[in-house]
Amino acid sequence: MTRMKLGMAMIAAVAMSAAASQALAQSACTAPKVPAPVDGRTATIDQVLASKQATLAFMDASDTYQSCVLGELANAKAAAAQNKTELPATAADRANGEVAANQADKEKVGAAFNDSVRAYHAAHPN
Image 1 (cartoon, rainbow, N blue to C red):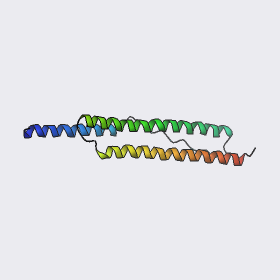
Image 2: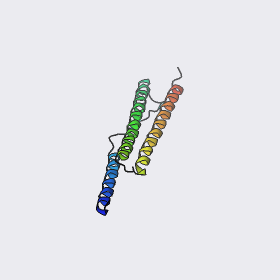
Image 3: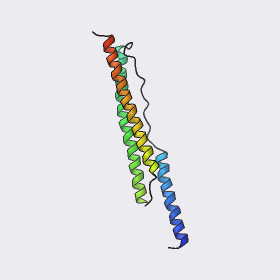
Image 4: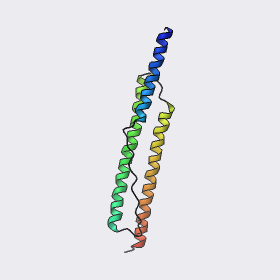
């Protein structure tokens, strides 16, 4: 291979890798908004039930979001493999970090809801 052809091949590989990275950076995945917790000591039963629905909706949306992020990562890896380029390690780190952050939010939201239910029952023992 001549130096010119080798140079052109390297430029193409870098461009393909950059395109895969850019696709991940411009994610179509949108993290769901964390619902506001309710104070179970002062909340009405309707507010607790609405909080339950918001919590369940957040959990479902989070599962969809995490699947989307991991799906985009898998697609970027497949595109890089097809183009015989390497996906930057930062792409996987970013995706895994987003999933981990959302998972932490899920745990906090679930714990906050459970705390509000316990507080509601303590304030309304009937």
